Length: 187
Ligand code: GNR
Ligand code: NI
Image 1 (cartoon, rainbow, N blue to C red):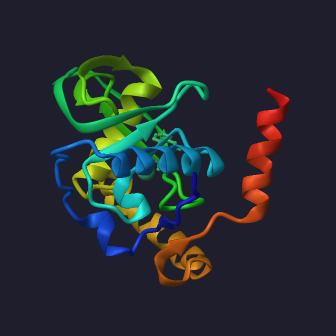
Image 2: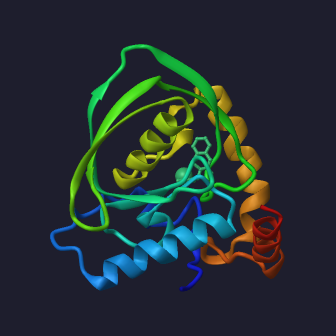
């Protein structure tokens, strides 16, 4: 397995549309495994392919911390008209947070890593994470939903942070990875 580099805000691939997966190859399964490892090392609850510089329509999610799964070619087939507002962050915009209103419940149809189609009815944080990841697959980021005022504040903050990521690349530090393994041992 391998840790992947994370693309941060400013990297063009984060704004590109992804390409649906036609066949699930061993190479794609390796990508999925590496994305799961990277998500854990970065302490995220989800990670989408464009965040690791890839354009396949695939993301991984683990909201509970013990049950990672992949969504391949996901689509939202139903969403609740009730919106819920909660704070979001993104591994591609480190140290930036903002409130986003999204449908409280969604039904997502996708393929799993074995090519089987499944439907997932979700609410709460899982529903939010699914929508956040599917947004990534369409080139959208959570900051796109902020008010003009809040977005300006967030971009001003990002201007002070982005210098830490030359070439719009975030390489997880040994400390970040060590902290992850340490947490594993405690469980
Ligand atoms: O780790 C993450 N936390 C999170 C919190 C609220 C809503 C969405 C997310 S996803 C994010 C990881 C990430 O950037 N996935 O694309
Ligand atoms: Ni994200």
